Length: 98
Image (cartoon, rainbow, N blue to C red; front, side, top):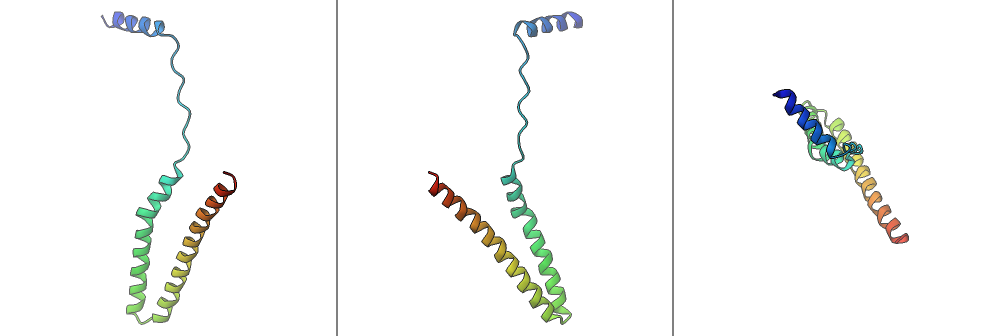
C-alpha cells in the first residue's frame, strides 16, 4: 500500500514538470541589525555606564565621573553628527541626481 502511494505521488510529480529552482539567497538586513542594537543593546550599555558613574561618585571620585561623562557625551555627539551627515549626504545626492 505504501509503495503504491509513493509511486502515485512520484508519477504526479513527474507529470507537473521540473521542480522549482531554490530561491536566491537573501542579504543581511542591516537596518534590522541597527534597529536591534539601537533599541536593545544601547540602553543596556548606557545603564551600565550609569551604574559605573554612580559607583565612582559614591566613592568620592567626582572628577573621574565628570571626565568620563564628558567623554561619553562627546562620543554621543559624534555619533549623532555622523548619522546627520549620512542623511544630509543622501539628501544632496538625491537632489543632484534626480
